Image 1: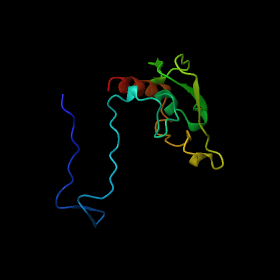
Image 2: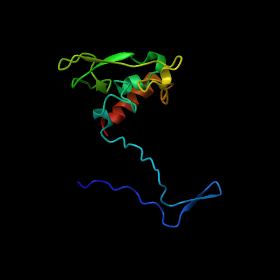
Image 3: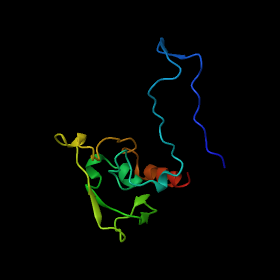
Image 4: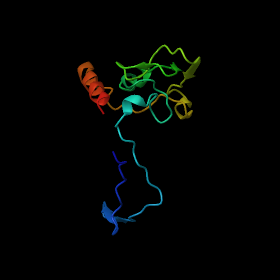
Length: 130
């Protein structure tokens, strides 16, 4: 299986809202693919959420701390609550005061939190097959 290659920018530039944009911007962001996401816990850019199930919960319901290690929870898709290999607990911050900008916050990214329990379960099952 070959490694996918990034799409090339058009050579003649493109228009966005009637503004010409350079074809090869100096700064670009390539979002992460979902393939294999089930194996990449903890989640968010800073690793502040232990499971995909927790990521689908409102911020105030996400764990404030969790153990880091190799034990995996296939139902919640992510780190298991109990870890036997290491004795490290990651403590995250909430959204109050200046904590949201701590670099270790579990805030934001509330897409999917309003789904029904059935829809969340279906989404998690789908992500397991990627």
